Length: 407
Image (cartoon, rainbow, N blue to C red; front, top):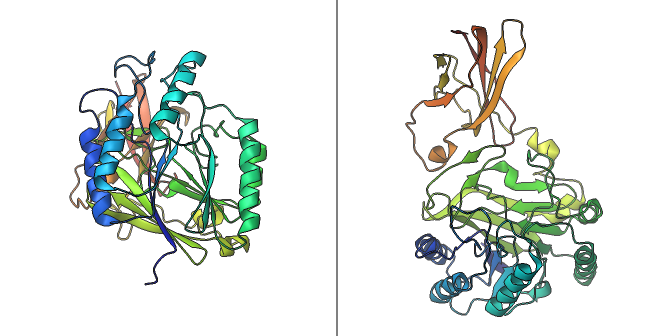
């Protein structure tokens, strides 16, 4: 295998808070796995939310700025990756949580500048590859037209200077994927997203959404390529509409990127499993320029959907539904169950979307217990309950149905 022109690791949403021992052990373990898996990368990118500015887990509004979480991150990086260049990107959690007080915002920015010794925005060429680093400058992440104008000028200059290789645009927040059920990102204007779509050699890297490396929504192509990074240390796996709570070790993931011959290969690293995991992503910017988008809308429509086995049966007592983990041969395991209750007149009485235990399957667990989900209270009457399995793109297979009566 040819040696890549550039190999770099991206860690996002590390979220080291100012509390004793909170997150340090998980981050140290993550770095141990990464160092063992990718011994000497050319670059480490810390794609925002490196620290978590909050006063306590109980108070949702932070009224102070803390410095020592940066020291924890620096010391661990020095220990596991001495001498490896680092690129720090400003995220929203570098600012006090749920607090846009201008004095605190400025203080948080000054701490970030002092601790990272880096500019808030930058255009670097590393190993012949251009990186444009784009910051968030407040907790609330509004669009920043002046910053966007700078980024478009720098991206265009990079594309003009190098007509062959991919150009990386690195920001904490996503530029938006229309398949997200979350509202379209408000941190970027439609004009900026239109600029990105005109340039197939741009590869956008973002964090913020904590996308699991098994989730197909983590990559999307629409004229350019955007990749959403997983959570590295303190946080949860996030599924659209529903959160998937998990132990911190299990939610700890990162990605390594290799650039070679104008192509980008990205591989997930799962720190609980202890190495590479998930399907590698292959981005061919020359093919994308010809309209070949293996991670675009058309390709997504061909992604397999989960199907229950013919003999799988639901059970319900009217207050909850139990779903068997029994699927047809070759069926992928679902990420969600879509649960619908209709009354005797055919009117929808309840609807909910629940996350499955897909992560257990990702980790190789073969025998899974049935899943039970609570149902909302219903007036007395006859109902039909329907459960449909969905893949990570929320495309569904055939529903299973069961009739029941609420007393």
